[in-house]
Amino acid sequence: AGGGSAAGGSAGGGSAGGGTSTLPNENCAQATVIPGTTVVTGDTTLAQNDIRYQSSTVCSQGSLSEGFATGNDLVYRVALPGFTRFSTTLRSSLDDGGSNWDSLLNVIVGTPASCGSALTDGGFGGQTCVTGVDDPDDPTSAQVYLNTTATAQDVFIIVDGYSAATDGGKWGPFTLTTNSTPIPAGDICANAETAPLPFTRASDTLVGYGNDLASGVGCSLGSNGPDRVYS
Image (cartoon, rainbow, N blue to C red; front, side, top):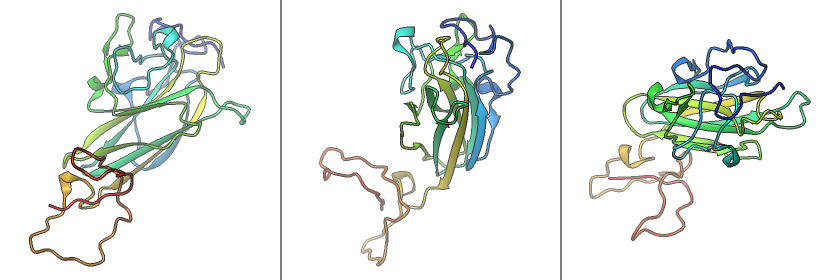
């Protein structure tokens, strides 16, 4: 791979290959729309470094030694229906097929403006992610987000590099996998099943339900399995 944008350099200042990127999904406003369940292949080698994570929350922020400057990035968008569980995984690989480049995977929900405010060098920072992970190949479990509302939401998936250093290994080809499934009735408090008293129903199951609720004050400990909610 060619050299990447220097840390703190202009987002418009050239791609990893030294020219101007012509890739269509360089930032959230230009994000490529993909289905909620799909497999996408791409390559960040010729992408620019548009998105930084200074002053961000939850996002996997990249190299501390470089002020959280990250490498070349591409953005995808999923229109997620209400009451839908979304998960995504990233597999990065170098041309030799046997090693991975140093990647980040971040997920943001909202509008293109949610992907950060403009920085003085032309990039974007200050995002709030719903989930994020460094080195998702190592391996890391799927990054999951639940739309617990009845309204559709835009989910932005950012494929990024850990560092803006020009020594290589921070960009390259990747495979992005997404999966969207309806949240079954009773999986979360927002769609709890009504159970008028007295209530008896045989053969209910936890199969297909998520591990969405953690233990709280007064609750039984060890809530690490699937859960189902009644009201």
